[in-house]
Length: 145
Image (tube, rainbow, N blue to C red; front, top):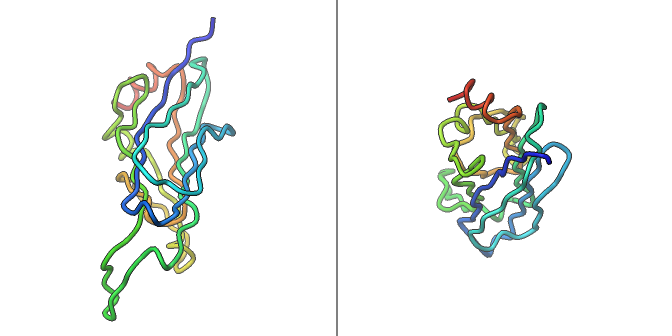
């Protein structure tokens, strides 16, 4: 019998008409893919809890300039983005651990240089959020909580 870890989160959007796409991956396994996030929904995947290294990734795709309204002074008036909330590993919210360890890589939708930032729950530019973790999960928890 193989033990597993269930990873889940709630995804949503600030603009259901924006046709923002979203993918979720663990290692080389894409477990969620849509070209249009329209409503808040829970997604999840089971990961083998045997000893190993893993990477959880969230990807925003299909965002373009029409998804952001900017005034003549360059101020953002409105923006469409994807939210990722309530990330859990086996029903335990990882909250601050996600903020501390996840990296968000993007290039401002082609208008800037490649950058890596902390992830605070919103994907506003086409790019990838990456969280590396190890199993068995309890050992990773001990190291990062």
